[in-house]
Length: 219
Image 1 (cartoon, helix red, strand yellow):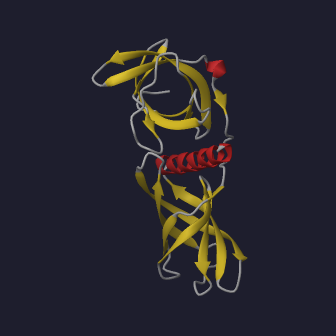
Image 2 (image 1 turned 180 degrees about the horizontal axis):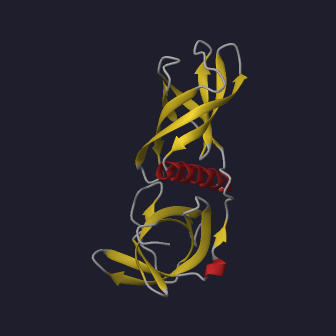
Image 3 (image 1 turned 30 degrees about the horizontal axis):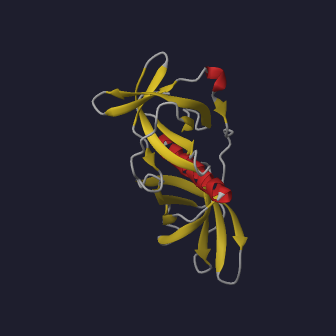
């Protein structure tokens, strides 16, 4: 866990039992503690103030694009260049990998601009049916004729839970076409060229959507 790494936190409200989600960054570390900036609530965007001893579950995306999770607690409030909190560093054996390297696909709508890499079709704008770090499925009009093997340049707009927007570029190849109804097809594409940073952002986006769905199930 390097300085600058984003942590997603889950903290249970002791009064209501509801689990709230926050995010923060690691701003310093030593042998025993991670120093984090004050967490921001994922929905309200308000800064959270936790008492010392608050238990939390933290997760982050590793260099291998898998998601890792550990439990910790707030050990102290400290003064640095900005107000910060110290949390206990877990033993390596207590950090659990909770997502396999294979990319998890989630059903969600993301705006996508599609351009032909080889000028085989006119550019168009559509939305996803699902997405993962390995590819996506697009909803397309029947009038747009795309064949298996065609390559496309894709621009996606991802909104994270912390209200950040990322604009992702990737080159993809059509691998499957499904006839949905008389009006639309569903095109499955796999990424054949995408930066590691952009792929990690998609993985993080999918992870956040999973957590959001689990949170709704608990309400």
